[in-house]
Amino acid sequence: MPRTVGSVLIVEPDARVGRKLRAPCVETGIHTVLCADFESARAELEHHPPHVLVTNLRLEAYNGLHLVLLSQMNAFGPRCVVHTNRPDFLLIREAVTMGAFFERTERLIYSIVGYVWGPLPAEERRQPERVDRRTSFRGGRRASDNLDLAS
Image (cartoon, rainbow, N blue to C red; front, side, top):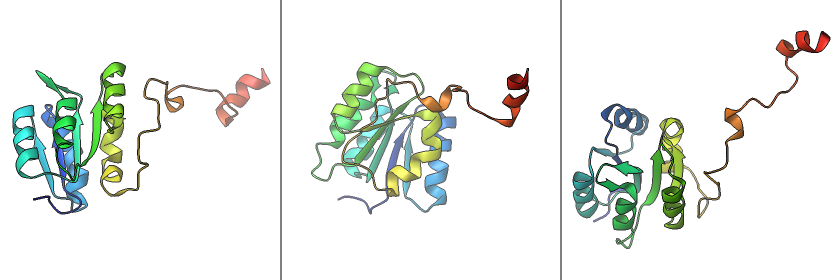
């Protein structure tokens, strides 16, 4: 029996990151279950299918793609989000092919509630292997640049 809309299953082996991902969900009243390993997450998926599955790409002997596949066996498959702080673009492309969204772990901490409640496109349209322009200096005219321009 599916849970109510807004339930989230977070699978994260790092307890500190798991707490950071769980906190915003709990604060907004979303029923959230945190699992630290593949085996407990698999049991949770089978007995209590979530509305959203958030999993780390790397789960020691397994990876998050195994959980994405298992979640799709249910007729009411959850929205899936795969995250990592060590990108493996081959696995990321595979996750996107399976219908999952990808987010870097450091950004997911701030955007996780949007994946639960927000309207999302039918499929991931971003290209994870492209360098994010927000992380590199692109120049521009700022007040701090005026001294360099005047000299």
